[in-house]
Length: 87
Image (cartoon, rainbow, N blue to C red; front, side):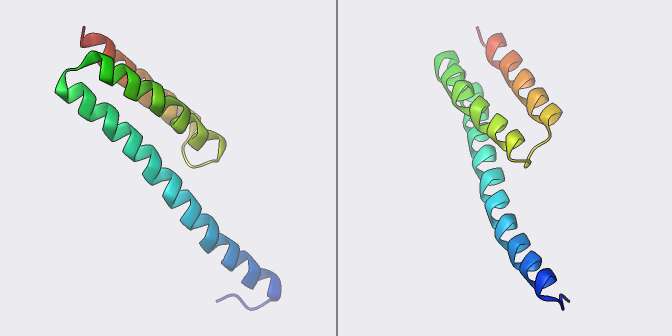
């Protein structure tokens, strides 16, 4: 348990940061799910639009430290390949 004033403050900040990161991760997953659903429906135009919306969201997660850069790049690459294959 935190005892010093500094460690108490850091514990408070960690809780707040955890909530923010959880919301960001959830938002990213939502955008990825929309792309997955568009691919499953077979509509290339909708899938491309969903991917275009998901890319900046994923990269924002990278800059905020929620997702690793290579993970985001891998996800975008694989989704883009799947959308392209819809043609």
